[in-house]
Length: 280
DNA sequence: GAGGCAATAT
DNA sequence: CATATTGCCT
Image 1: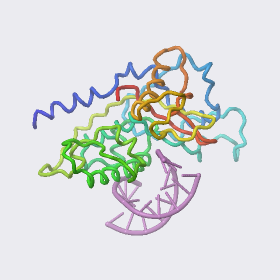
Image 2 (image 1 turned 60 degrees about the vertical axis):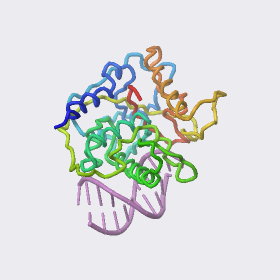
Image 3 (image 1 turned 90 degrees about the vertical axis):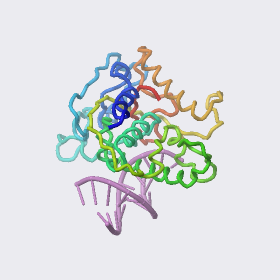
Image 4 (image 1 turned 180 degrees about the horizontal axis):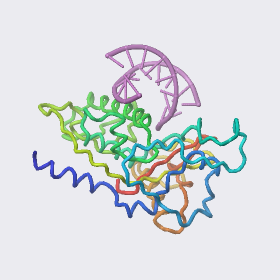
């Protein structure tokens, strides 16, 4: 019982956006079927008054069979009554924010408890599946490993070092969130710290976008898209900020669409964007 | 079944 | 290219 114990929770809370802040932006979970079926409402006449659906109960959501409203046309096999069955969920887009939540969860869970299931539960992100987390966790571990090998300079911190030529694959995303020091080296003398497990439930909005065609979301640095130069980090943040503005403006309940890093798709590739509306 | 990880697929 | 999926193992 150190003084830290009394602090971790406060910090943990602080990092999260308030429900009120989430409200304007968060949409209820738009089920793939629904989104696809309706092809997402047009941006100019969105749903001005969207209701938010809170789930006060802690639940590992397996939103895989809830809504099944067909748009009327259905060639469905059999009769066309059954709920969504073999529908594929869109690819999950790991925004820096979402990943931050991921990292926070892992950090607070401790290495031992940081397994896909628990992480997923702690994150409490609607629509997030165990597989999503598992896949990302795998990559994240590789990232950490890579970094341990290169952790020479005495930055004393745990930040992304130079990334050049190695595996610049995911560095961009991962570098955007602070990596707890204990991650880099196994607990020493510290058995483990377990958490009381407090089910914080913040609702994250889910946006499914159907975009014409955008290629890479995370472009190389120094490549301005609309004639504006920006930093890699900023560019990402700005993209998100744009999204937020649209929502907070209250004018248009616009779904993410124009934003390059928002819900986008390459020729029919649907993308799921869960975004928290909070700080970075 | 759940997890970890490498390979492979989209 | 970022995720998803699969295979094989513990």
